[in-house]
Image 1 (spheres, one colour):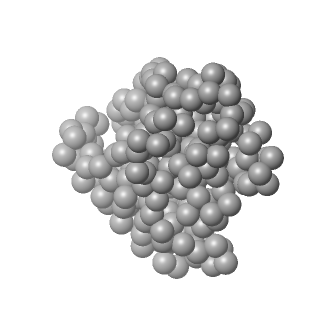
Image 2 (cartoon, helix red, strand yellow):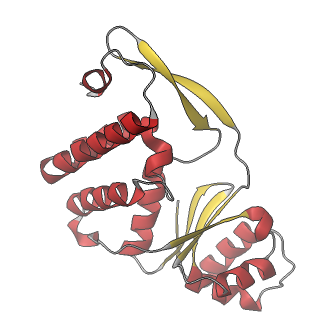
Length: 212
């Protein structure tokens, strides 16, 4: 049973402070489940996390707590790939790195382990989330064509647990790339604009792994 009716009661317009509080309660629920029932913890995330996406995604105020919880869950589900290593991420939009040369130069200027390349603008739509037996609802912003926080952290986990993973394809327009791998692209034509496919070909040619 969802724990949202208990959390929301009859308040159908939660303010930011209340949302932060509920996000913390959600994360505590996930952490408690993770210790004895990691599969149920994943199901809880899939069912409830849409309410908190902007807070638990990369760059959000509660991302690190969420990342640790998901890493714990995945380590319990597959101890052979267990890891707690946290890799740093630099977020950049495609308009800044729209060819191989620009991407290589950007990578040389940052210290982060991973580059997260995304569109500059992702359209939003409003979704009304129904809560409780009375059908109380409130508006949540959903990004069209966007990825959720769980997918982001699963990609981070793939990088952290396997050094041979050099790329993660989250959508056609959203990718993560290991910074050290980008340096291998220095020998490519700097004017190539099909950055994603070119990096994918390079990874395959080097026998490296791509998560998707």
